[in-house]
Length: 182
Image 1 (tube, rainbow, N blue to C red):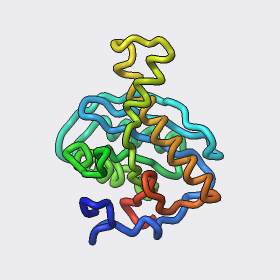
Image 2 (tube, helix red, strand yellow):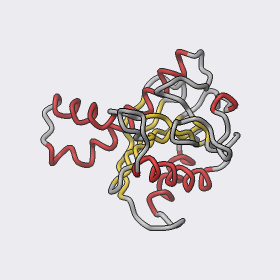
Image 3 (cartoon, rainbow, N blue to C red):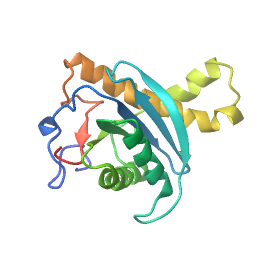
């Protein structure tokens, strides 16, 4: 994909990605230290927190990716949605590169389940605000904020999907971008 967010030569067109239909979806917030994980109900109405994984490993060996792949299998997920942390301007920095790399490694571990990249601007900010509103101190928020961000990413995807009548597709700001043609 290019820096503009348009599909590149090795990324399928987001409009060509078929909707996975009814089933559990997994939302992922990739951070440099932790990975937040959320899941939906089978009807794709509500995202709920699942866990926070500690990032570990390097290269193609990541125990956190293995744990996440186990969650995908255990929940019989039909799709995984990974947040793409673009800058407010839409510009892509190192965090986007890391999220793309993580999604590619994950995609190879959960195939044929599709892994999609979704714009996640401001989800961590919203997650911190919601947790502060609940009275959680910043120390208590550390692990939970990643789960809450994953909930925000997944819920946004579910809402867009539902608005489209349950189909995948391309909408600015919440674009599901398949990593694979499945």
